[in-house]
Image (tube, rainbow, N blue to C red; front, side, top):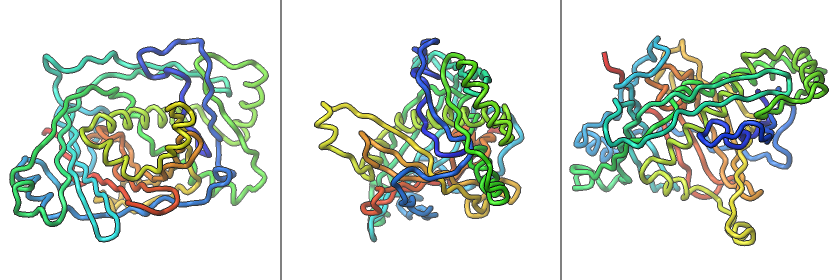
Length: 363
């Protein structure tokens, strides 16, 4: 639900080793009332960076597109041939490096990694039950870079090394998208301005039903706020979609190294904890509607910004915002995430951005 929420699913939810009956709660504030305690920084601004000449040369040599974003289709599900191209830019001062990543749904073939289709059954403290089928799809990844401005005309641009990988994803989770949550938060913020006495509501999620007294309390608050089953499903679905997208990003060759360059990692805290990592992802109350024209989309498409704070072992380590649209094909491949701007919470260091610059579908 909209609000200050943590993308911490019940243990194993949406993964093959999910064990029903083991309760771990994920708390979501139903509607925004306060920011993350003690934190007021804002994420880096979106930077619509043009592809460097070296990237254009490398894309042409590798047969990858770096421009051309057609309107999303009316299809409900992605199909083989749907694909997007993402331009990743890492900038610090005048220094700029870029990568190009192509993600495309492909027909499965012998030798592809196997993955059991995910599914999840989750309960909310308002008394509702939701089932999600994971589905399965094969994604072909291709990545080239990094390239800087001085690489134009050199072998790195004219005959680039392209790293390729095929992987499986939960297609149904990607199709859930994330844009409905910031849309609801923007609407609720406007409502709170008109009705400042609206109660704050909290919803928890578990893999087994909640006690009757908890359901009675939270269901009453949800009714006052006008929270529907569709709202709750959208909130849970956004967590599943983001989780699947992050897993897909983690499999992209070289992308982890790029991300490490902007993470403010609390090494001493990690050493003291014996190398254990505790990740916590929280939504920040800075959602807003964006101009679709800035993202190469028609005016009929709604685009929203959704900011997040990632903490590692209790220390804020990355602040970022996502640009989100409805995950209509071919943008289902990226869960409707068409942009990102990320950096260290203290505002120092490099800024990482990416933007979907091209998309395609088969006729």
